[in-house]
Image (cartoon, rainbow, N blue to C red; front, side, top):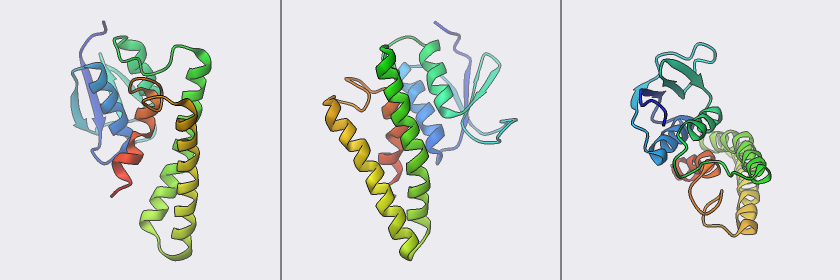
Length: 159
């Protein structure tokens, strides 16, 4: 098991920070949560510090957490094909949903209506994939990478 000196530098309103926080909690990792102090490249959250090593970018952090703390639940599927599908759908949601959601919440008129339509279409594609898989969670029979990648949608969009 990996050392437990773990710090998460994030922001409570960041869906990217929240997905990493959820992953740490699922794995039972004890960590110190702080506001962002330093991300030397992008100046964004989340940043994970593990044994003095600084890492950034939420998807990279999810994979690091899964590889470092190997206890259940496993976040990524073990099958390479299923793992590639999880990464595909995570990236799809990452590319489509934040932009559409932000535009929907922060604009009016035709621009808002078009963004809402696009967000609904993207969500419907995700829902179709869920129905096709017939699994309990997005990524399988337990909460995993894809659930963490997309969880912010259900967490924040009602706002």
